[in-house]
Image (cartoon, rainbow, N blue to C red; front, side, top):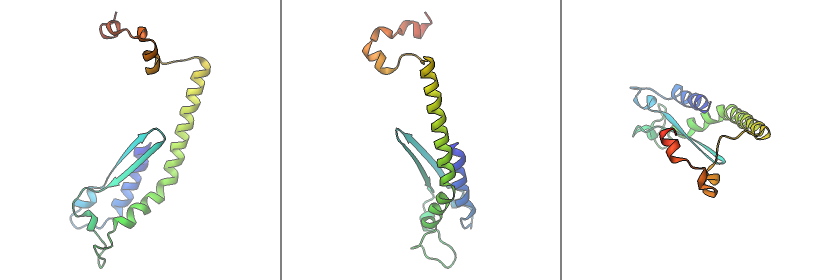
Length: 128
């Protein structure tokens, strides 16, 4: 889901990027990182000269990416955040349902620290 939205942001940038050979246009990419309480989306172009690309008649002192990347993010941000919220809510509902039903996926790390006897290395590695 995040990939789909990030692809839309990058495609917008590519669609509005000036083309001479197409090399810098084709190098736009994204990466996202998710950690507890944080989702970060990085949009970048590793082509060495992309930071200087500007419109005809413009100046390298006013590179296009400074306007285009925030513009693209602004166009698609709300849709992405809505879908992320929806997915988080669905996941939380499912976890609550499982908790009410008494379902567990097995011992967690803290369970294993508190009770090392729960670990069955031989059975886990060799099936019995």
